[in-house]
Image 1 (cartoon, helix red, strand yellow):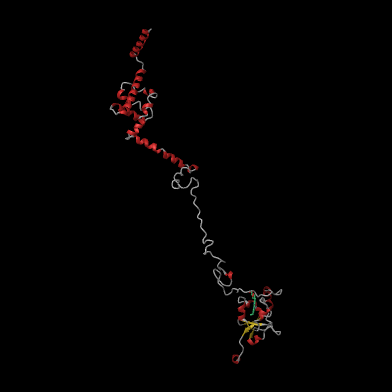
Image 2 (cartoon, helix red, strand yellow; image 1 turned 180 degrees about the vertical axis):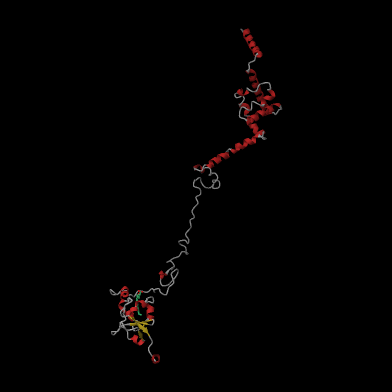
Amino acid sequence: MALIGISLLVASVVYVVIRPPTWLPRRLSTWFSRLIAGSADRSASSSRDSNIPTIAEPSAHDDDGVPAVAPSTPPAKPSQQMATPAVPDIELMPPPPRPSPIQPPTPTIEESESPTTPKALKAPASAMPPPSFTISSDKPSASMLPPPRPHPQPPASASSSMMPPPPPKPPTLAQFPAVNSAQRARGPAPNRGPSGGLVPAGLAPPPTHSSKPNKPSRQVTLDPGHSPLDWARISGPNADLRGLDPSSPYLRVTPSMLKVMTGRKGKDAWMALNGKVYNVTPYAAFHPGGIPELMRGAGRDGTQLFGEVHPWVNYETMLTACLVGLLVDEPTDANVLSEIDQMD
Ligand code: HEM
């Protein structure tokens, strides 16, 4: 039995040697290459020799630039595995070699190689955060508040994490002058108008010649039918209230003639105003100031007295129907002689 077993073993080995299967060479080649690469990396880490490190570097380059498949396939083979076909290696690569050889090269790349590719790789890696910030900042809605916080917080580190930023305090003006200040005015406000009395001040209009003096009224209560409107009705344009014959012309009244017309003793009251003589008897009952006041000017020239009481009253219009004549000087001897000469 032992001989039979040995003979079968020998026969199988001989058969494999004579007619090796198609997959056997490729399998052996990959196995040898990986074995050599592993030994090379370990030797390279300990001591840098000539042949082994050169094999490890190209594999590292491939790992960096291209994902997973690139590193094992192309460059590591050409030097020693020229005879083996490199095409089918892609299918066999995944299982064994990845873990051990690939991890070491990535750190070595950053350390040893700075010339070409790393710059391009580092740039995108470092550029990652900026895009994230920009995305968050582009959102104008509620997400805006959190991102901007970090910026304002450093300056306002003393303040707590309260959301409402330092609310601009409305300028509160202190009362000036203060309530208890001596600069505050005390007592009544200054006089800015005529309400204070007769003293004109401020914006009050200046006193005019026609303004009434601020005196208590002395007007009397007139009897019914004796209002100013009643007087205007009965003293119209065609009225004749002179107390004379309607056919008589206007008289030349001398002061001696005027003096007896006082309203007493059955006579009318005549009054001279600015050179004209009026019979004020019909008007006496319509005089707002009363009859006694009006009679103060009867039988004489009442111009000054009239002006002192109510210079604004238009007496000429009111007493047109009462006009007697003109006040003239007393005739003297010289005047009588002159008049005779004129008659001749
Ligand atoms: C010269 C003799 C006169 C005297 C002393 C005299 C006196 C007065 C007095 C004291 C008043 C009251 C004033 C007041 O409101 O407190 C008055 C009012 C009046 N008198 Fe005579 N008066 C005189 C002649 C006349 C004459 C001849 C007329 C007119 C035609 C006249 C027409 C008036 C009028 C219309 C008022 C009312 C004035 C107003 O309401 O503003 N007065 N008078």
